[in-house]
Amino acid sequence: MAGNSFGTLFKLTTYGESHGEAIGGIIEGCPAGLTLDIEAIQKEMQRRKPGQSKIVTQRKEEDEVLFLSGIFEGTTTGTPIGFQIKNTNQKSKDYSHNKSVYRPSHADFTYDKKFGMRDYRGGGRSSARETANWVVGGAIAKQLIKDIQVNAFVSSVGSIFVDKPYQELDLSKTENNAVRCPDEASAKKMETFIKQIKKQGDTVGGTITCVIQNMPIGLGEPVFDKLHARLGQSMLSINAVKGFEYGSGFCGAQMKGSEHNDLFNEDGTTKSNLSGGIQGGISNGMDIYFRVAFKPVATIMKNQTTIDSNGNPTEMQGKGRHDPCVVPRAVPIVEAMAAMVLADFYLINRASKI
Image (cartoon, rainbow, N blue to C red; front, side):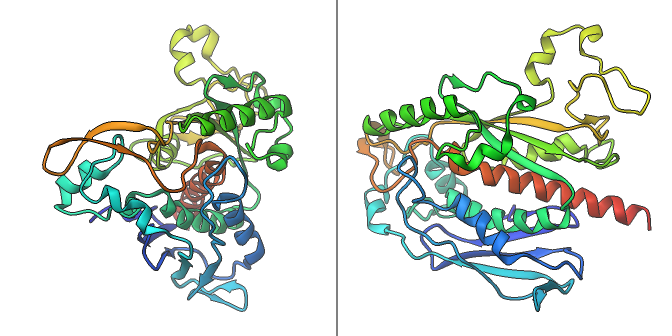
């Protein structure tokens, strides 16, 4: 299958399945001489791992990263960085009932028709387990672009929204609760709602907002590799993502140009930032902010009608350990994908000036 690599100069290629022995990847393009904080990388993995609270899947994985190459005495050598993450708590028997049944809104049907076979144990390559690899790449990318701050947070769950702009939030409080929402009042409502949904055997979606600060001017290319286009691709590659908007987003479509234009200050900054920090596909030094919409997790603990691989109608119910709402665990994934895009453009920009 194609499509296992992401990036141009800073490039991540991954392998493995949800219920295989291990997952892992190779990171190419990371410059030599970067001293890595391995504890910081592992901390990012802890943010994404399952079983961390009562409102996420109870699969127990330590997600400890084993680096195999490209690092010597804690410093990158400039050669490919190989890594592996063992799968230690997979329960494949929980999926045996799916062997010949297509789960609604999963990749079962499309995989079967495209490849003529599929790994029904947790979804194989289509499982969100794959995103653990992305967090490793993103954690290294963050250290490469260390002056740029990438912070994501849960901005809505179902119909519960944070009603404050990000400028009024203390983003350092994002990790203070299980939902990863920096607004305490909203976080409590969200957590209560997710627990209610879980008891009902159902799931719910939500949105994540990401804010990128201390941005340099000039990242991104003006035609097909626009910065916002690459950010959009990265976000839409994440499992369960159904929408992406940056800056004024869809609300901007309701405005007049006189309302939407970001007028300049004398120092080159802008009085407003409806452009979302990107103009002409290139960063302008203002904050980049965007929002990502996640659908409800497709596996629910309720009876659903479906079909089997022979097209016969049947009924099924989800089993196993699943997130009732994916957004709390997806926060570090959003940050990781954004960081890899920025690291890639940082290296492209640097190479263009040599």
